[in-house]
Image 1 (cartoon, rainbow, N blue to C red):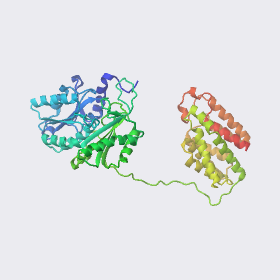
Image 2 (spheres, helix red, strand yellow; image 1 turned 90 degrees about the vertical axis):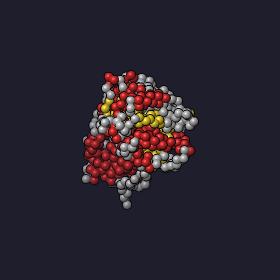
Image 3 (cartoon, rainbow, N blue to C red; image 1 turned 45 degrees about the vertical axis):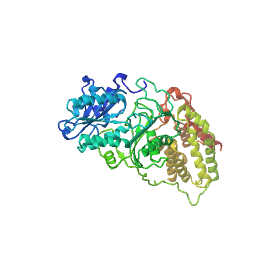
Image 4 (cartoon, rainbow, N blue to C red; image 1 turned 30 degrees about the horizontal axis):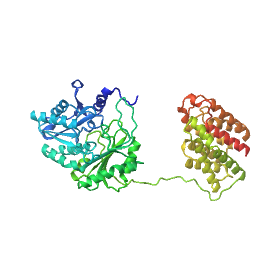
Length: 547
């Protein structure tokens, strides 16, 4: 299975079934085999008496265009063909008949041969029936500067919004059409894609980045090789700004950032940041998106539309609409910032130090630092391969505080509290937090007068409470709990180290982990592999016993 589709021949109908069930539209009876959607509240005799109806459409596979832009303030309806195929003349004519009232109907058509012909013939036939119909053709793609028929892409949505705003003011059809036509030179779009769109049942074919790759998989104008999102944005902005400048339109512009279908949300946000802080210093008065607006199935790419918006066009883009897919116009601004209140580990004015205790601490630091690679290798077999690195970074952070004279080694309660604060701040990850809980809770118990073993037992209980793990779950607790039990029974560090080693080795025979990343691995991946956290505890206890 390459995609979450049902069948190739029902793809567009399945898509429109979802759209029609979840938005305020009416859809043509499936038995008619015409894919037409119109505003649920639209009545041609009532609304269409004074307000021009707006129809657009084209091939399927570009969703949410165009059905997602049906709503008050945008389209009255949309006509959809097959995958990347124009709707039939019959479908367009039926849609005109459904929505066109006395005020007339404007067809907004992307500049592709099939769309021009089929919408155009339907318009002619509708006029013969006495209906007032006009048509505007959108060719906003500047990928081929000298193309006699530039393609219509995401800039078509700007036209939807402008026409919808004008229609809501009950502008007459002829005037509305003229004002839309006059705005077309103000709109320029260009796309860049890392892959072609994969049709249903097809695997995604390898593809070099292409500038101007068409939304129907038409070849791009040239291959490009941007090394970053910022470079990709610059690759589009340069010709876009040059084109608009040549037409006599200067910045600031409104930018529409469109996901062509397969770009991840993270990619789109990075592209948005790159657009806002672009290398050209281009001023933007508004941004639409980032969002999937005019897509091409799963094409991994994006397009930028720049709009030289005059006051009317800006007002149109900013106006509210009931169209569910329109993301709205946002005004760029510098991020509002605040300074978080961070708890700095307390630095005592006078530090009492104990050479014997510091020898033990440095022994633990040394073994964790030396074991970095071995523990990472263990973790790579049962987790994400960074256990050793995380523990070593925590150990090194403790070493820095010890070297700076910021740990009170002569006072166990203060020492444990200091180590806990250090690990919480500098170690990171779940293991850093868990070990910080252990040391912080144990330090608090030591301050109340408990002995070390009892304090560690309380620390373990807190680890279990917040972490959710228990002995037998294949974690560091399988080595730590037996070691602390040995101390509570009166054993020395050597006995605690023996028990820790036994517990660590037992994790290699545990069939299933119940905590940590290894809990998501199959039994076969865990057999014979010692848990890296338990192994680390065993190594530290052995180092302490030998110090």
